[in-house]
Image (cartoon, rainbow, N blue to C red; front, side):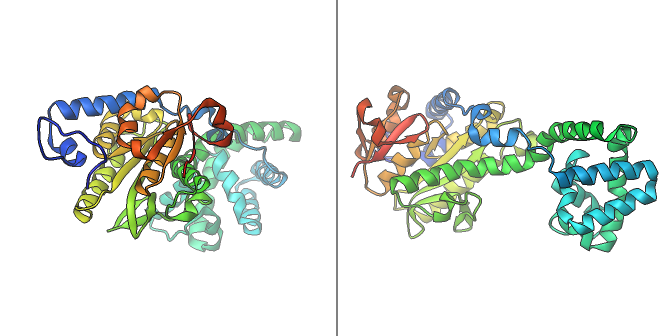
Length: 373
């Protein structure tokens, strides 16, 4: 497996796989190649705080009338006593199980926290909190578990009049939302990256699998020899490009530092085993401010992927896919000097366009592209 257009190094007359070079040599190439890629990465890091996708998670809609009624009823029940509180909680959740979700949110829990805690107690739990009401043993403990937390959070509101309680509950709703949505946002954020690539490929008419990614980014990945890829192009039966995607917008902690790098290394090694006599390009979609504090993870990805792209340079994925399909991309980008080596490697798949043709092209990060043939 080789990357297109790589120059021979150190005077060697035999072209080397970029994977073999980058993973084996510890000298000039390894340091300079990763340094150059890191420089490109840092100059194109995604500003997630201004992205429309991210902003959709930042602010919570107001509590619905049903949610407000439930929480207000629980506050009033707290004023009566523990038995009344447990009774109201059970009646309300039995009638509409999904109402357990705003309860979990306002006490600072997540969907998974209550389930893992109950499971640690040796209880059989459902896959979602909404199913707890149907499991008598788990629900009995759930009532005690939630009562202790709700009492601490809601009891100070017992003495307030109803109007003040509603205001306080809405403030609590907004304050607890970021913690509640954090896990869901992180999961969808990673899939959003591959979804945008799939949508770009679809709109350009470039072949890729799984096709469902363009409309459902969270659909099942595609596997080659037990290794998962977010996208492949043109198809599973004619593999030319394999894409692994990872996005980090916060410090993920030491236990998650190497996950992305290890997955890319695993993918690279598998492709080398299975496609020794074919050109298959491994591309990493890697982005986010979190990688600036995760140097080991980022450098592991940059060292082991044939190519990489970011949200701002997502056009690179289209160029490589076109190359793998013997097609040509019309391209207009603002900083070609930052991508000179990449553009040279894939020159046979690129034609350049002028500013006056942008209205006929698709926006792809900071670039504009269309299929040229």
